[in-house]
Length: 355
Ligand SMILES: *Cc1c(COP(=O)(O)O)cnc(C)c1O
Image 1 (cartoon, rainbow, N blue to C red):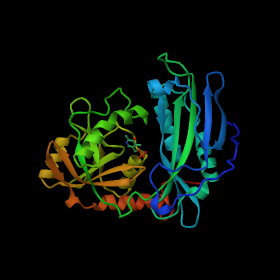
Image 2 (cartoon, helix red, strand yellow):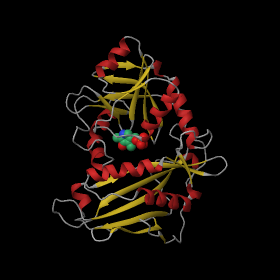
Image 3 (cartoon, rainbow, N blue to C red):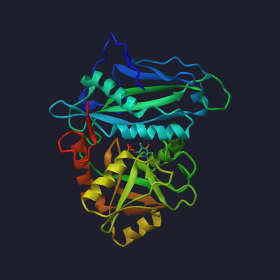
Image 4 (cartoon, rainbow, N blue to C red):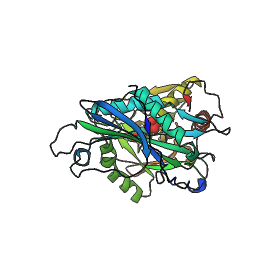
């Protein structure tokens, strides 16, 4: 796709929020990217226009049958004012895997990375530069046919909106407690667990709400068939250090293939720490804890990068990890990845794209 992106500039620019009080996903920048799909034209008419409300018919398909998918990544400002993206092509490749599962036409990866760059570049004054802050980038696609007939839409809208976000750890990186969900499930093989599909998140809210009622920050999901194998945490992949090995659940179609997960695996391998991607039963984690072999546990995802786990509650058994302190590997991974993302550490992996 080689279309030119038309630009319509906003004539009233919004006020930039205070960098110290950024609330996730609340403020949006002045412009957004929009591109439409029609069967006869394919993806067409890419444009950057003022951020604002959409007009949508009440019969629009995505409202009724949920054909809606998304991605999430960030732009970072370096100390010397450059703007960096972290592996953006991976997000667009994953969006296409999601699209395929949801019968949504695939997008042109290179063109969409270009669109992200052009939009972020236009909005560079919105990128905060205080430590830990960034500009969150939310590409998403909705089905726009106006019909109640249950079928894949023949028209779609792809959009990218941007939101300045604060430091996830204003008080420094610290562990969270997590409730192991043993009733509700997030996904099964053959389902949509590997896709960043809106419905997955709607389906996970009840377990999350129950965990919060019990004083836990997040849910650890178990597999949908036996409630036996560990899957992932909320919107993060999960890692355990048992003995001298690092373990993470293998990708079997039920968990989200996180880009942070992939980066963590590659970094740990370079550090010559053994990493295993395989099925991990919650019983194995519990047993390792009982034997004193469970050294660390942490989640990985774009939002927090690394989120250490201080306690797991599995059927009332409290599994305390590393005295509820951030482990060595978690800390080092956090410093390494955020260092690469913000240009403080040399990128030996080819992960950084400068805008
Ligand atoms: C987005 C997401 C992740 C993390 O993916 P990253 O690419 O590392 O941000 C993990 N699990 C779920 C369910 C997610 O939605």
